[in-house]
Amino acid sequence: MDLAIVLYTISDDNLREEFSQELENQGFEKHPDQSTYTYPMNKVGEIFLPEKFSNWLKNWSKGKDWTDSDFISIYYLSYIKEGSNFTTIRNKTFTLHS
Image (cartoon, rainbow, N blue to C red; front, side, top):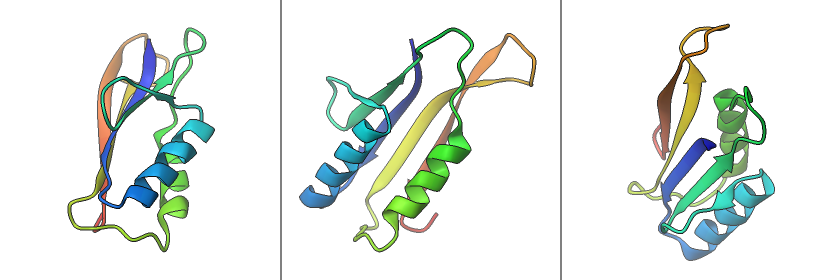
């Protein structure tokens, strides 16, 4: 089971390669589908921290050459409320203007 899935479109080949490498450095694994990475759940009850990912992405992307069609979307499991056993799938999408 995966905690998160990243889907992305990055036009520039070098930027796309750099992003892929950085995702792997963060613990994401390449998925067979093109432009898809997954973040594995290593133990039951583990949670994904979208704020940590958002902060990392904002810092990493500073000064990079994004185009209007480039985007990064992350889908992740999140507890419906703290202490709950129920989860939901949420997502965030990052673009040049977000």
